[in-house]
Length: 245
Image (cartoon, rainbow, N blue to C red; front, top):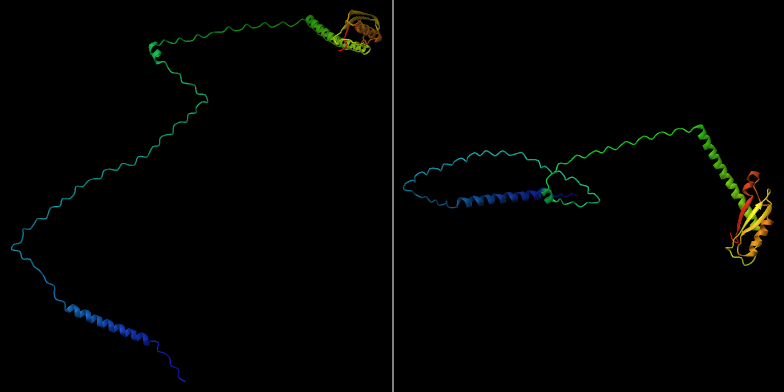
């Protein structure tokens, strides 16, 4: 069995032949049309005489202008910033100058100020050193003052003890005013015994006066310091008593 194969170049060859014939006929048509066109008509002007030759205008060359020298650019100078002025917290009002008075008054020469010379203080004379006798007297005086202060504290202490012991033994009668006051002069013996108790000022209430006297006698022996040398300060006592102390 024989197989039939198509011819691959058959179609392109036919197309190429068609194009070649078409181009040939187009070339013939153009050449024929170009040969059959009539020649273009020409018009000629006849002159009896030629006109005078006109001189060509002289063209003057423009003057050469030298360019002005270009100044170099001046750098821009920036103004300096104004100084910052710090205003004070309190602005004092400006005083107006009296120009009229200044013009009227003539200028006077300024006199120099006189320098006051203060007198120098006189040196104080140095105190002379105390003599041995003066130093001894000062020492004795200081010792006596200290001793008197100590004795005063002892006296105050025992006077408070005596008054407190007597008040505890007072039997308060009725209807006694709070501001009533009875005063007694008491004489003591060594050891604190009461030699005498005498009313020097009545409270205005006889019952209260008698109650205070009984309390004084009941409180003996009264408390005294152990130092017998101090008994002289307790020999005569002035005692005051009130219902409310």
